[in-house]
Amino acid sequence: MKKDGLNGKIFKIGDLIVLAVFIIAAALAIYFMTKPTGSEVYIYKDGKLLEAVLLSVEKTVKIDEHITVKISGGAAYVLKSDCKGQDCVKAGKISKVGEMIVCLPNKVVIKIVGDGEVDYITG
Image 1: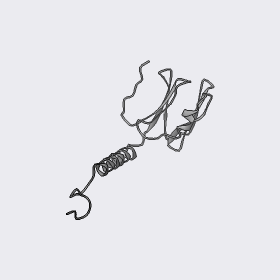
Image 2 (image 1 turned 45 degrees about the vertical axis):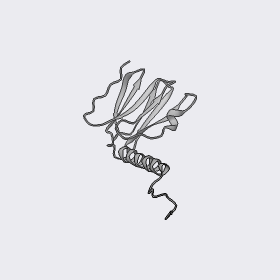
Image 3 (image 1 turned 45 degrees about the horizontal axis):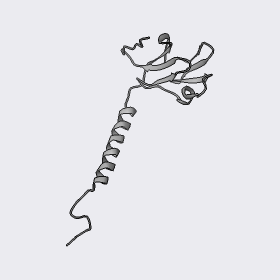
Image 4 (image 1 turned 135 degrees about the horizontal axis):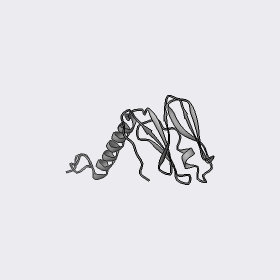
């Protein structure tokens, strides 16, 4: 005799999968929201550090007339680029430690770093 149509099971396998996905998504959201705000932006071209600028400074950096990076309001973003896909422009503003914008056609990397963080790119 069935009591509630669940055959005595509280959760079905599909319910457990949905619950696991929800828990993982929540954990990732918490992790990314709690990353510290960076203090500097490093701008690389062809693997070489071109500029290190404090995020507290208002500055526009033109790189080889191909790409323009704007540092404003504690964030950095690509203001203008001549690359075809415009993925670097669409990336939006970055301000948290470890966030990056990469423009592959122009070989430019923009990375946010924090206090005391050692950062390097080998070329």
